[in-house]
Image (cartoon, rainbow, N blue to C red; front, side, top):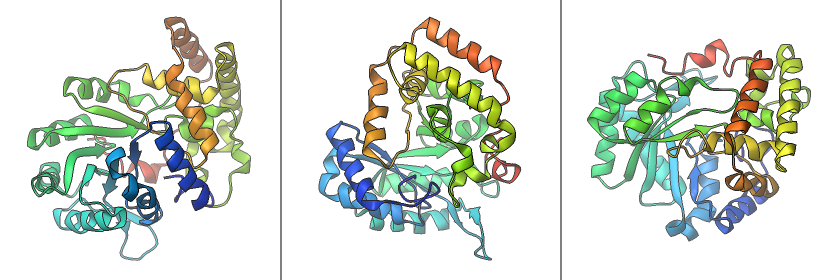
Length: 308
């Protein structure tokens, strides 16, 4: 996402180099969506994907589209729209089959059984191998899984976003669904390098409550404290944050986004960090001391998240 959408100015040359570096590091689970850069991210990935198809497990998503006025996004989970969207993604990615195809959200106007039934037809047709959902509730996951096996559930999950622990994470484990946390670094906040006052115009985070001035004091102290815990383990805050996510379950595959090789290499080092019971205790105590982190979405953005 960050290579083509929402996080400042794209740098395609560095992004391509980062994709090649990912392959060098053995990172082969790549996540995109048709809405990232209005298709440009799928096209960007295709430049590396086409020549390395057998090395990459590619996931993409459908559903977000321009509203009728052309000044905002709406979600369309209808079978008719999905059929057009998958063909467009296949063309942009320059592949014959998509490994994992997600519904980017749950459409309140389309029964989830109808949407997933249409997605399952793509599996039968050989255009898609596995199905996924994003930001879906327990009820929607159960309904979807009864129609066709759901292989992956993608939701925001990090040190600062813990809601999935209540029921989604356990359900995924019970149903043998991989849980895919996006924004596992809280959109850069837990790296202790993000100055929210310096976010560029057009940066998506400027619209999110968590990155506003009223939460800055709390979050600055929290991330500084977390950086101290990371230093005690001779690792970076990013590495400890990702190691913490990985420690929450064997069915968890975090997808930290980056468009730079140096951060990719840093993130990859998280798999070598052992998070102990004492580390978990210290992290929980720190979070309890600085609870006023701010919400992850605004009221209007929450309306696009399934909470049924």
